[in-house]
Amino acid sequence: MQTDKIHSLRWVLFVSRRFSRVDRKGRSAVTSFLASLGICFGVMTLITVISVMNGFQRSFIDAIMEVSSYHIRLHNLEGALPDGEPVSRADVLQYCLSDRDVTSVHPFYEAQALVNGRDGAESAALIRAVPQNQLSLDAGFAKELHVYSGVFDVSEPNTIVLGSDLAYNLHVRVGSTVNLYALSGGNDVELLSSDRTFRVTGLFYTGYNDINASYAFISLSDGEKYFGEDAVMYFGVKLASPSADSRVISRLEKAYPFVQAESYKSYNRSFFGALRVEKNMLMLLVFLIFVVVGINIFNGMRRMVYERREEISVLSAFGARRDATQLIFIMQGFLIGVLGAVPGLVLGLLLSVQMSTVFSLMSRIVYWVQVFVAMLISPETAMYVRENPMYMIYAHIPPRIFPGEVLVITVFGIFSALLASWLSSRSVLTMTVAEVLRDE
Image 1 (tube, rainbow, N blue to C red):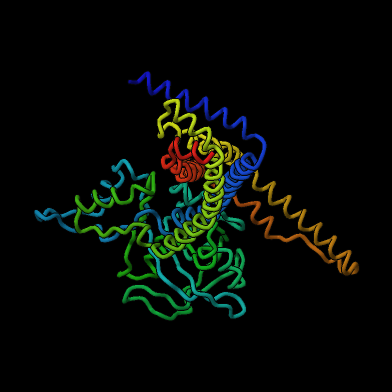
Image 2: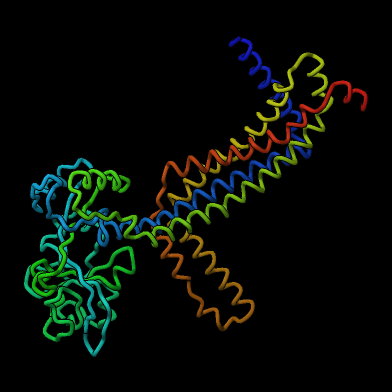
């Protein structure tokens, strides 16, 4: 039985190769070439676009995960177990650090404030109180928070580190002073005060503009002093893998039911939802390329089946099964998909890796085209033409290539050709030898 299947497959491959040799010229060859070319460009475009979008999104997500929200937020760490045994904060922290999915736990306070800068400038900000040695404690925080002026130093009382856009809005720089004029905190905190003056020791930026425009860091001791006794101390938990958040929260709540834990997925639900919708819509639009290519393959294969009706009848007369005959045309569709998807995969990965070169080249091409048009229409304005700076911004965004997404795109390109060839070859099963020979 197994031998018969092997011989049948060899026969299908042999006949498929013979059909392909005959079809190297004529409309069928052109249709096959255009179909493979369409799949190639579809796979290449989708891989490139998704890689660039991943680069955009991951710069935001990494900054949020490492600097802003952490993977899990904990508070209310002191309480009692159901049997009445008291549990201290240290016990919960020790349990968290012993979890195999947890890499670090960091305490912090935070409060909202209206900050006064120079020349009457004001801006709303989120003031976060962190340990003095936060950079050395948290490698991810140090990686995503880039200090471009001064140092990240909150070791002295009343020192503060500001985001780049926040400092710009306040008209301050390193060495300037700012005042936390309006501050949210506990019941013992004065809402409005001109005595909460801080000296700026550093300015930073991250990959997410909202953090740059609203975040400021002070020390834990200053947070305890200015936020009041009722201020809630949070603990940010970093995980080895973001996908482990549900497991860690489930284990923690099972061990200590009184602990309140919040995942980054719920804390940033609207933001991550918007990114997911944006990515899904983009993939849907680019997948339409495969739909158009599939329709082209479907029409081309139906014409091929019709043109091959004499050969099909002869094969049937010599004992070929109809499913084996149909498999011949499915095999040709598979070859069309492979010949398009594999080059598209290579080109897509090549473009993604060399994205900075591509955008730089595009910038130069667009610039010289604009200069050429300006010289034809208005030569005196050609000297004012400049390169679009957005191309260089895009060129400095590192693309992120995820093997799973690349595999899905490539397989879908091949699958679209297979599906189209299968649908078009179903007409093979409706023809009989007598009908074909009578028509001829």
